[in-house]
Amino acid sequence: MTGRRWTLPLLLLLASACSTARPAALPSPSPPPWIVEPPERAGSAAAARLVAEADDLVARGQAHAARGVYERVLREHPQDPASATALYGLGRLQADPGSHLRNYRAAHAAFSRLLAEYPHSRWEPEARAWRAVLRDLLAREEESAQLKSQIERLRQTDLDLERRR
Image 1 (tube, rainbow, N blue to C red):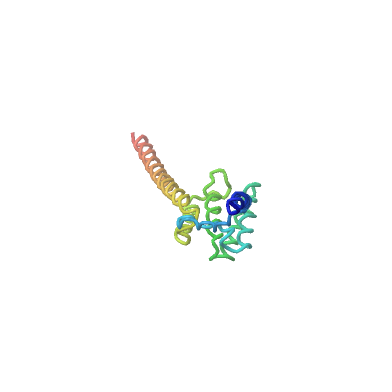
Image 2 (cartoon, one colour; image 1 turned 120 degrees about the vertical axis):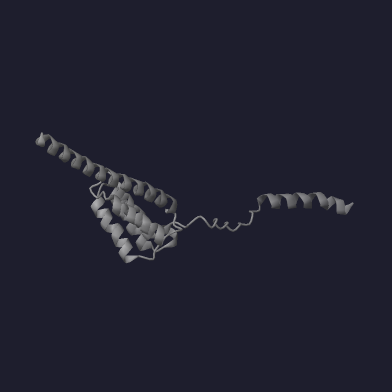
């Protein structure tokens, strides 16, 4: 009887202890291999700060200053993962049709460089898409220039024929 008398209080004590105990912290799972750490975590703090400064300059409409900061990151931190972000920002600046820095060939080169030097960066899918769109745009511009040249030659031929009559 005495064993039974202590069984209920012991079970209640055990149950209350279990309900108030904190679960042990589980280690955070590692990210899948296709997820790349953002440069702010993976690279140097200085490079990440410069990229953030350049991004802020872009947001404030200071594209020329931003270009200089992106180029500084590429020059001073070439092995840092933040350089991938700098190349992406530089490519976007040069691809912006409303920008005074618009240069589709340079933008294509920036995205191509990003893909060659940082093939597993978080910008890889977007850089690949930008590069494809810019390649098509550059091809259309080349076709347009050739057609304009042909039209000008035909116009000149037509004028020559009119004069001979």
